[in-house]
Image (tube, rainbow, N blue to C red):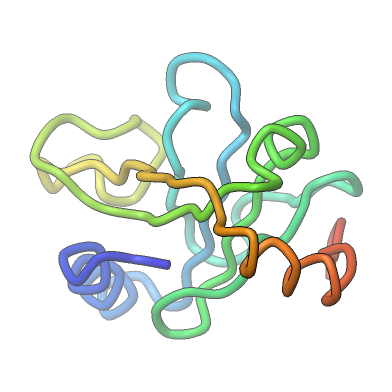
Amino acid sequence: MTTAAADDWIVRLTAAHGPLMFHQSGGCCDGSAPMCFVAGEFRVGGQDVLLGHITGDTPVWTGAAQFEYWRHTQVTIDVVPGRGAGMSLEAPEGVRFIVRSRVFSDEEAALLEQAGEPLRGDV
């Protein structure tokens, strides 16, 4: 999911750079924020997990360890004023993408369990 503000920035960055992708490693520093790349500029690893697609069919990936931590969490990408990660496309724009989250309801968790495991790796 995304906020309206994040949607606006994703559309703007897509217009400037072409198709995008997001990845969040779950590491420290820059890895603790969602990183926005031109599609294909970041190589997705075999254990990375596809969380889904957002604005403009933009894939959102996370590392396997981060996915296990977030497995029961609704992740929403938002954007706020501030200095972004140096490699993320929004960095020169004076904004940065962040993640907001909440625990899935029991009903949502049951639907996700029925859907099965998400895709992993370079698809």
